[in-house]
Image 1: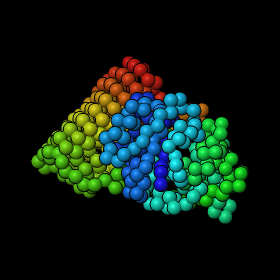
Image 2 (image 1 turned 180 degrees about the horizontal axis):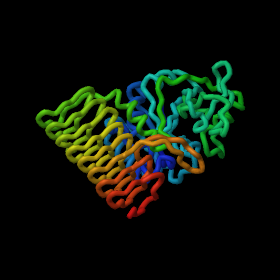
Image 3 (image 1 turned 90 degrees about the vertical axis):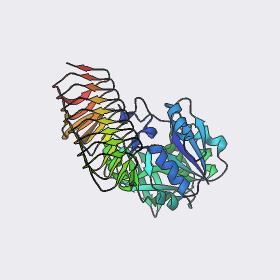
Image 4 (image 1 turned 45 degrees about the vertical axis):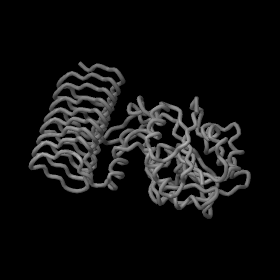
Length: 384
């Protein structure tokens, strides 16, 4: 069986984190979302995998080339929708195939459930169905897909993962999005079976990455490849990459994953549900918890960073604090309730004694010392 993964989109609602990388390449538990999908397909014996790339395609291609799994790559030169992306891959499709978004996590068991079905969709009951395609189901068959309704008629949504026959390609026509083509197929009399997924996770907004990271860390494998100082306490499932140094008197409580060539401590605390990317430096007497720290970031001494995402190459000054608060954000015209500490973009520079209260800080922002940040800070801003 073939599989087609659509990984050409940007993931605009995940900004500022997708300014420099596509959503499919955002690392969660220190691996890109796309890699979890490829490996789940491999575990089900699916070896003929086609990946459609577009936005920042060089990053996706480079990562796929580093995997031991052979993958065919198709380029969507202009991002004209998911149906158009599938049409780009159509010349390579020879039979029944799985269709998957490249920016959602799906587990091995869910793929096993659907791959034996023809013309089926994996479903999920979601508390916020209006962010997805809501499924109208009768007697186990999908009657209609209602894409992102303002008032959802139910809670069962499409995961965007389909098992389809080659005849589905005839319904793409001039459509730009897959749900429209699916509705056309159903209207033409081809039934679409609804198959509940075992586990499926999507990150729509940046703070959703914290929940996704916590879920995926439950499967972290214990590994101690770095240098661990004296009197270090490590409990639970903790993975420490090669070349990493854990300073004396530090404490790490899993599940935690720490990348390669990091410097942590001494006297640091890393609390559960934390991912630390490669080449990260965490200065002494700092606490990190329930957070994603992306590659090449630096967290100053005596800082307290919780419920936060810190972007690539960002430097957070000494005595910094993130403070989780409840608020409402406007993203692409939608008012969204959220609670988190901070989403800090790439290459941010913040001086000592700054406080981040439930804020989204754009890329390349410079913050002078002692400032308290709320709300949204645009790319390139200077806070003085």
